Image 1: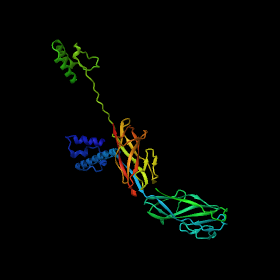
Image 2: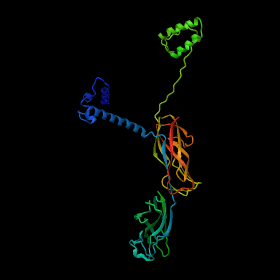
Image 3: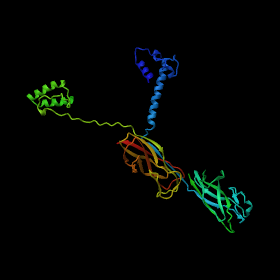
Image 4: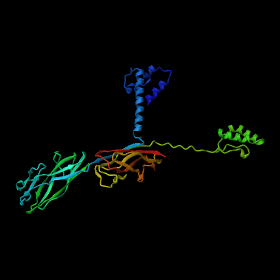
Length: 214
Length: 199
């Protein structure tokens, strides 16, 4: 401010030659502040001063206006989507298992591959991952498996999903996010763990698949 | 002062004789005497009382205020709605974030009222108004409700409503979306203006 006031005083003093203006400024204040050497021409100095002052004024105006919008236009965000449809193509199939399952595990992958400690206990029919068709509008979706009901003699857990040929991902618990396509296949695998109480006969379990827009 | 003089002159013109003479003398002396009703040194000459007219003080009322400013914190959000929303169905997002879905048409996303930061000089009467409503395809927006600072939930479209300003307050805006039966899948954002004015 001192420098500016001095400059204005000098500019307004008609008895002083404008060409000597830089030399009237105290050496400790001058020219480095402006960004030039002491041999700067006055005309250039004045142009630069005007540019700095102009920029400052514009900056003040912009800063004052940044938070002063009135009226303010507000967006109402609305997205319409087709209702999500889920159609079961086939259930999660374990086939026929040895009743002497004990505490062994049998894992069916999303690709229907069988693994785990009890693979030898699969003694009939062909295990297969669950297959459902999901119809949706292209948008972010969440895929979730919950409401798991295990049958007598075992428990179901560690559900894995493959939506539209994507990455195989855990889908129980909190579920996981995907980007929907109009129609896609969702494959679901899981792990069956015996509890040493299985009896002969059907022992079906169940679970729910929920797909929601994010 | 000039107004007082002119009034006295009008009185003198209406009084012939001695009274007019007294008044003229008073006028000649008056400039040397401070003229102020509350000045103890000010002594009125012995004039007829009906020569004097009392000056009436008129107040010029001026109030300086900071321009009211509005900054959007977040948009009004309906999230994802079933495109089969018919004309009989609606979704309401209230200023307190309560969602009323008449036909279970909310299928995803987040629902939230618009949140704006309003800056104004505290203690002033202000009007809050929502207008320039632009609904997207497949629905209409109606029945805007606003809640300013610690105030109550109030209708704010139409003529708007009045509040007392605080320095920096939050304005929450909710609205009802009514289907028209012709929505198509995809983004269908609408918009509206919020205006704050001093009364």
